[in-house]
Length: 249
Image (cartoon, rainbow, N blue to C red; front, side):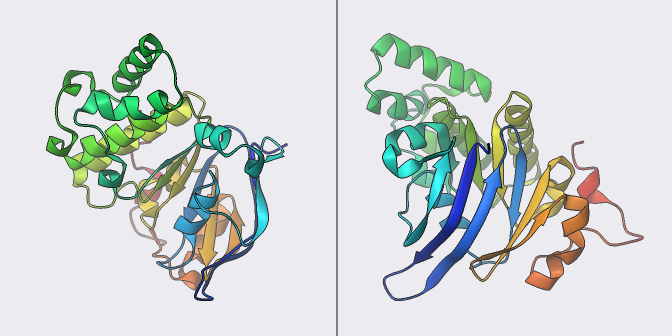
């Protein structure tokens, strides 16, 4: 049984715009799934349905075989979403307070919250910045803070929406290494990106979305040569350096 699944998932905005339509997707536990597609293809809308941030017009999302609509709080604990803009997830005055926000809203005991915050900051290498203002962090550090905030909820699945946007090379390396570490420690990863060269080497599957529909799904080596049909930049060509297969591998 897949850990996460969508069936006939469709979302129509109030103005009649169809954002996603008839999405049937199965995600297996421990997978590293990359979702690519041009702007406006529905990738972010899909992501926000996977933990109940958006309610579908039609269809359902299932977590471990159960509709997430039965228990949205449980879904959001198990399916963490790191937004494209990490600033939008900052709610605390300090790094530690920001990470504590989620566990505190679960009404965990103070001692347990403190322990979870300490563990989460250590996991992403931000322990020394616990008392700093989140807004004083670098772009890469802000993304790591967003990841720490998600880790504090103890999710099984983590979704990253365009995690490399706006980062310089050191920031990209920082964040990519953290994503790979999370995958190696047992998390199921869904990564939305148009920068396939950075992640293709690590993906178990590549899914392509186009005009709100899922148009390709399979092993990266099988799907990659179709991406340009759907407006996604090809990260490599015959005879060129195979960046996509060597990045941080």
